[in-house]
Length: 103
Image 1 (cartoon, rainbow, N blue to C red):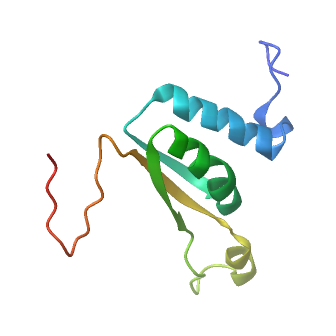
Image 2 (image 1 turned 90 degrees about the vertical axis):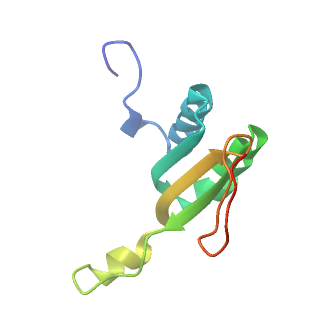
């Protein structure tokens, strides 16, 4: 425990840490939120549904395939990536292949 009597984050179970992160994200009330090293299971089971209730839409870009410089076993075992969420009331998704108007 730290000086404030709180458990060190590494001592907390993965799910509890994820809930604390989610609570912080919701408290910030940001228009755009990015989460690094977001596990795919937490994205689909926790972050995406809960943030959708708060008016966000999101995508997860999982890590790519191993390059010649990476250990293939390590890269194959990675199920995390970068999650990006945006408030649908403030942001619009624009495809590069079509014009977009933000009004």
